[in-house]
Length: 149
Image 1 (cartoon, rainbow, N blue to C red):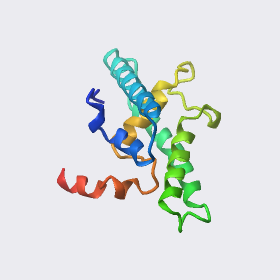
Image 2: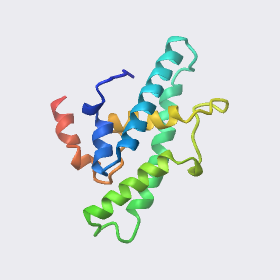
Image 3: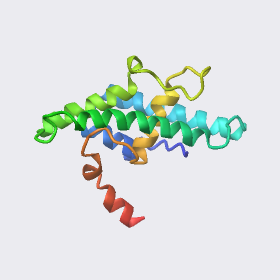
Image 4: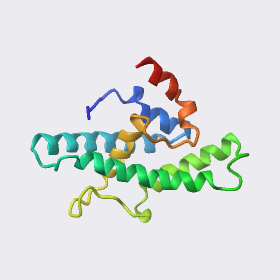
């Protein structure tokens, strides 16, 4: 994971913009992304990780995201949702993945700080592995980016 300080060009910021995220949400996302990035690098450099531990953790976060987006997509009004509804759904997905009441997913039992979880979600959003807006793949032109690479 590379820590890029030119945040405005990063996909996770663009994804937050898809649901009109406030400046406060964007600032917190940037902070969590950077802190999680630095923490992951520190753990790796200090050999404090088990082989595959970060990938396993990311898969757990993806599973939680998939559960929530599956619920959203199962809503009876989802098929005919307006763009305003989709933005509300996006905010709900984002909130679900960042709300302690939904059960946080610490990387380890004794590591409680939420910035690793929240920043790791931003990392996954930045990689376009997950998205907040239900139509994020189309809106972020993911297929085009995959064909260019």
